[in-house]
Amino acid sequence: FGLLGLGGCEPYLTSGIEPGVTRAAEVREHLGAPGIEWRNPDGSVIWEYSMQPAGTRCYHLHIDQDGVVRAVDQVLTAQNMARIVAGMDETQVRRLIGKPAKTHVFALKQETVWDWHLGEDATRGKRYFNVYFDTAGRVTRTGHETVMPEN
Image (cartoon, rainbow, N blue to C red; front, side, top):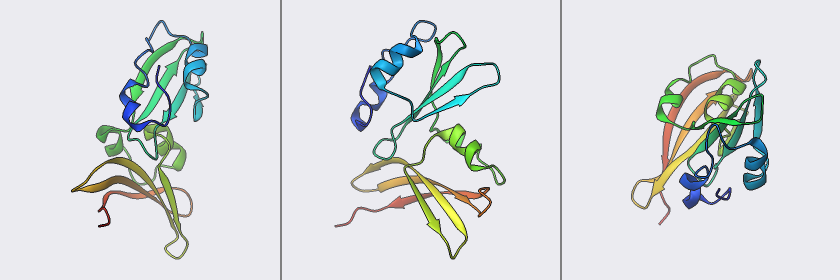
C-alpha cells in the first residue's frame, strides 16, 4: 500500500490491493478513511481516494456487502470526463470523477466552477478540467484550461 498525498506515488497507491482478496478493514488500515463513501442500493459501497489537488488521479474502490474489495478504478479519465453533460448535478459529477482540486464561486456570473488537476510540465503549464455549474448546482458546460508557469 502507498501513502495518500504523495503525487509521485499515485500509481502505487493501490498496488497492494487485490480484488476478491483484500478486505475493507485492510484498506482503511493502510490508506486511512476514504474521502467519501458512496452507498449503493445493493449494500455495496464505493470508497473514494482522491489525489487532488497535487495529484492527477482519483481511485474508487468497490467493496461488496461482505467487506471485500471487488474492483479498483482510476476514475479521473478522459472517458469519464466526456460523460459529463449539461443538466447533471454536483453529486453526479463528484461520483463520476471524484473530488475537484479547486472550487471557484463567481457571484456576478452566477456560476460555480470545479477544477481537476490533470498534470503539468515546465513548457505547457498546469492543465485542468473544468465543470461549470449554475446556481441550482446543474452542469452548464465543461472545458479545459492551461495555466502557464510564471517566469
